[in-house]
Image (cartoon, rainbow over all chains, first blue to last red):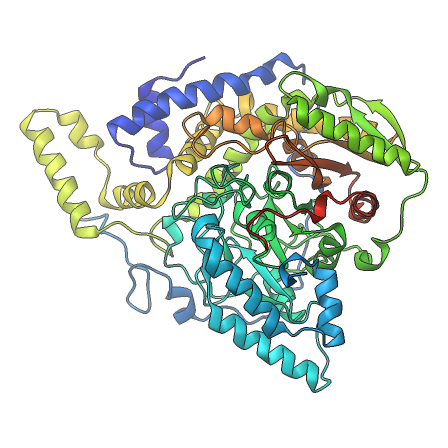
Length: 96
Length: 514
């Protein structure tokens, strides 16, 4: 199955990536090629196979419910591109 | 013999006996870096003064008879995806160009506690996605054996710096072969531990169910020393396994008796280079001469490994890399330009009467995410995010991700079955020796197929080791890979050491190591 440019454009929104028209063309071609390759898995009958999400199939690992030191606000904000020392700042999304 | 040609174990003995000092050793490596790294480009950052200060401090503690750690004074290089507190950790991405982690990765804390000298951060494929280190946003690392060729990847800088005599040991990470493949192509020893053996806390995540940190070094004995420091349970990584860490540095010297090796039938098919095959078969003869028995085994699903991997790894990557949103840390696009651009788009669409598209325009926050990520990520990272997002999107999840998870179990079962009859699986690391820079960069699928012999270990979660077993006529290293059942790193190291006692491929040096 090959991918259409429109599908790839939709995925780019889901992936939160802005692609230029040229990138979109190249991505459509390359993703089509890779998806066709990975579809070789459909040759295999996996009807009664349990999926394996993880190599070490551990159940829940619980930590003791105790207070531990964590990053203080200044350290947590230090790498933020835009903040006011209290909050992360983002472009306005409401009230256009 | 120049200090640069000694193994880490030899250097530790020289440091202990006072035959050399950490300052002298650090100066020797820094000199080699200064002279040759402008060509090799293994390091993204080196801070000579800081390394020398640290070396001097450890030398002084040693002279004063204070307690010192097991790697005291030894210069170790770090792949630039391990968080180092207050120092840049870029993952070779523009996205993290200015990122300074607020904490140390667990393995960094362990290296510091062992009194290693952290000599610098090494180059890699951006976010560890790639097999040639050409996907770095900053520089392309060269193979020290032939500067026109790739060092492998994604831990290409870590492998190249060992081959080039620029550090005693290096730390890398392996998601689909990223330690073993560059080790093989650069002629050094690299070990990917069992999933869960080494804490991933502070490792910048690529594919969390596959990522594992491990050592690169000149010899198996060196790798054993480093693994002993890196390995062990960590409450900060809930997938790290709470079982005792063997004394690898001591047991590595014990040869394995009655070793049973399995030669995978499917590894010797189409595409395997003749010189690589000959060297691997020769290596198997070496083991036979050391008392090993060899039998054929089958991994019937091995040929599906790459397809399975290139679904699971991009799915996990698309989810992990969603954190780069231009808000919490990392690159953010210029906001004024962004808003001006959006306004211009809106005006143009309105003027053209395309009202449906006006309504569908991104809001400023979504466009900020999209534009920041478009500017911060390189082409391979974008490709994998797109692939993963596609495979996980509504309607495709069962056909791709769920299907791949099922095949993953079949691949694991192949190994479990094979290890009923053999102790280790032996075979090539890669189908060919190092290829030329630029050769595969425009063909992602052919680059992915380089991972054929290495991805299955990550999918199954088992350990593997790569080390040199010969050279091509063109003078390029050829690697041998051993794979073991879960948590048998000790067996891998002992088997590799046995081989290195009987051969000297691991003690050959490229011309730039005098």
